[in-house]
Amino acid sequence: MSFIKKLFGSKKVRRQISSTAEFWEWFSTEEKILFSAVKTRNQVQEYLQKIIDKLQELNPDLYGLIGMHDDITAELVITPEGDIKNIVFAEEIASAAPAMPDWKITALKPEMGFESISIEMNDFTFNTEKLKFYTLPDDARPDEIEIHLLHEDYVAENHNEIANGALIFLDNAIGEITMATQIDDVFLEASANGAAIIPIEKLKDYLLWREKEFVEKYEGIRYDTENDEYTGMEATDENDMPMIAMVNQKLLSWDAKASHPWMLVIEIVYKGNKSGMPDNDTYALMNEFEETIMEKLKDSDGYLNTGRQTYKNERTIFFACKEFRECSKVTSNLIKDYTDKLRISYSIYKDKYWKTMDRFMH
Image (cartoon, rainbow, N blue to C red; front, side, top):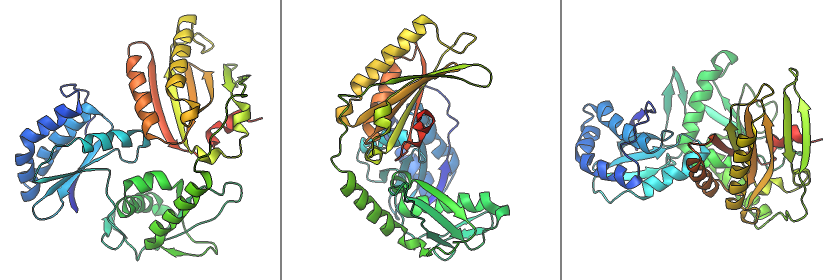
């Protein structure tokens, strides 16, 4: 597929479209003129921006790629640009698309393979000749997958240009879902420092092997929370602002953390007193929200509440999760119920060893 334009909308909050069905109803009325624009490359940006604007009425964090899939079919790719929490929403919108002879609708940037792409950016080339990689196993964190990239034109002065191009190349070569979910960290290096250098086209095979190994190791593992106890912690920062936390210390000592590799972090911002603490009504409302989310994200289903922190006008709630799709949907829907009551946001990211919680270990 040759993408001819990638459009980032302006995140205008215009709620003319409020459901996936309404989006596809609108798209169906416009698809012929949109197809013509893509096919002929005539006023492409103008027409394609309409798609992104409408898509972002549904979800302001979704974006689009568009181009000709083949000589007779246009393709729209709905992408969250690697944002884990929005993958499920991109997938659901794409799966609800009606059948249209001239269009292929795809969730997430597809895998294009290494041999079929070569990217030119900022006077640098990114392809199988220019890029290699190596790995450095970490005995302390054996399940983490860190990829160290080598580009033959890399020097410290062009770090940002090479890093951006390399990541875009990988995103297209192995596909967005693989890039977002199977790699823990990517580093750009000047040299391999004696490590075995691997052709970049071997990366997909390496990731598949590591994923298979990981699944076999942790499949079916569950944590019994019956005897857990939360420990209260209090501290003050350099400005004497108090921090209060409730942490599941027994859970944080578990030796199978990687079985729940996704960290869900929910943040509630409130208007606090001079010490940054909430008033009684806000405190009760936040506790109500937390109790509700714990009822919906059950530990028996693979969602482990590791603790919470209240500090400087913000309550932060932490969950370690076995998966990222359902917990994102549940959290997003519950936040909507509290829109007029609390300012809540959330993020989900890979954290196999729960490094997020290191601050609470003692």
